Image 1: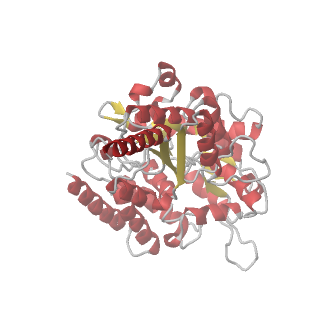
Image 2 (image 1 turned 45 degrees about the horizontal axis):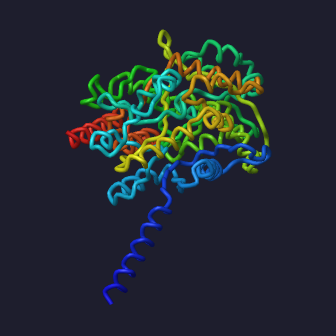
Length: 448
């Protein structure tokens, strides 16, 4: 009897060991909706947010049959809540690329520093600005992927047929920029009545209170500053910041070059107005030009058109400003060395030369100088727009939302409320920004 039990136990042990030895390592990653076309994707179709992560996961598993890669596409609006819940329940992914990351995660030991895995060649090739995006207490926590954003808050898009119809030299704007005074004059020429009822229904530009990046540009252009130098106090109610917000309000109410109802509009309403040619000026960079092609393939718009990229207007005697940042992949802490090495192997795969170059299908610039030098060579139009976009970021780029440690994500809703009140007419720009500063400093105090 004892011998039989011993044999059974031995068999169970051997079976357990065999299962353990045959078990695959699983890597989980999250990514927000990036519509990147993988190799071989049909050129007459618009990629979905699933195509790239599905392809990348499968290709990596081919290279590493002992690894199982699972991806989740998480929407931008739900990302913060979903990430907070996963951290609270210790079900966070191994790595992620998304609109949310908090420097406190690094300070509390939740994240892996990337420095031990960066080669000298990678340090030389990646843009320093992007490497420094994730610099916390002397260590880096973001593996670089893209440079710049979709262009919101960075540059404007000009529908050139309208400019030519109005007798405006759009090439001069692209090359030399335009002052705030020139912008008003040109915007008035781009605003007209299309149906003869005596009311303007075509406007130069439109704004949305929930479209914060583009309105923020004007506050910064007039000299407003979000905080003091050491980020201990929110200061976005100075005369300069108020003048910037008043200027945007005047574009709507005083000059009538933008439609009313700003308090109820968001970024996609603004984009829609531009796509429908209800406005002559849109916002964004190469990515937003690519959106035109994607929307055409999806049947959401009926016409392919080719806007040009131009800088935001500037105060006379001052440079324009442009929201500039980079982003990449963040890796959560790994307890197992073999798992840690494999996660970084996957990150290096995602950011290899060929795979970084896939960002061209999204009309984004990459984090790699070497890759960027090879992009858009067969498309003179896009090559020129990308060059303009890069010039604007390089000459005028600045952060809009403070350092990685600054809790803008907790203040954003108060800033949107301030904009909504301003455009609804319930508060003056001064009153609205005063209220935002009170709420912003309350958030800072709670964090101390």
